[in-house]
Length: 554
Image (cartoon, rainbow, N blue to C red; front, side, top):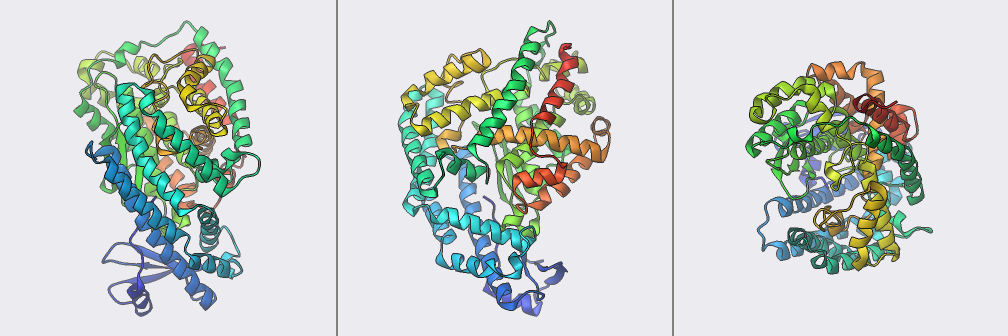
């Protein structure tokens, strides 16, 4: 959900006359009009193309950017809801979101959009699906076909229930009472089944919902990937559990003033490449990142004065998302070629900066002296090795967002299997807390004593985001492969990090991944970047290479 001020009718005349201080530059088969007055750019085909097709494509681009403005406005209201909204403002916010969702849906499914796309399908602008115009046409066609299958009333009700659901989730979590949340979750699941039926699927209902977040992915493929990953992780977790080596976790539980955590987190996020002149950081119940435009990316985190890693690694994680959003082609904003390709790829960026960089020893060779200076009372007498071991502690835990790299994907597997059962009707919602406990006993050997730290810990189901959780594990797999390739291309990354040099990696990611937008599907993008299909091999190599010396494994 990203927006940019779009081109209007007057801009088309200006575009031809070159007035108002604007300049025209040609890039291949497209021109870019840059406005010094309002700070946005408009992309369209140049005179090399068929005139009628050019005009149609220009209309399509203008329309897409108008939709992006509305979507960004809706996203801004969503950010405000989870950070600033007064306690009693939820009902009216739900009405606002429902209205905007309906308005956006009407514009996305307008008959003329289908006519433009049909006309362009046989034009030279669509001949190469990897060109800017070709990728825009292919992806807008895909989006149009999906949206036109959804009744507007269903779209509006889902948007409204998303707000009410999140409000109910917040209250239920505070009260540690799943029953307060159960009615809205039951209604949400019923609506998601309606959505899947409307979109259509062959054999597996979940495919229709997964496709919204990871276009083209299939449930069977995801299940196979997660199962294969679990088979490799379980023996590694067992070997670590049998090790006699254990970090001193108490050193992370001293006094870490929130103001200083905020200051330190911002310093780290800026160092890895997040531009605070084009973004901000706020607090929320469940950290997230909202990209609202090319120069407006909102990060959120949460703080615990007695535990440093919670906020720090949440901030690095969300900064990874934000760096991706800030690296998308600004001149293509509002079009598919200016959007992230999938949540799996988006998650690869956040997990890479959080874990492959932020939890590396090299990162802390650079930042630990500053951490000791900032949190002298808690870390003044702690060694780098002690701190590094503590932030890489591996043990089954209750909270997904605070879990270690080795067990994290087991948390995802629990949620994936539970939401499949909920959607298929195999698991009644009233039995969800018990099923949650059973899964955690089976996969992690622990059980949450509360609903708040159990079935109510994640916000996703309250907002109707069924099909989202698997993208976290896909992101881990992509992150490992991208990081390996970056090391081959750039050289010794650890040496760079130890010197505080993070821009080479950020620029490599921006060039190889961010700048491509939705030009290629996720799987193809991964193949182009690494030369390898998606696999768990790189992630397992990373985990073994990192945790074998820490825990003295054979």
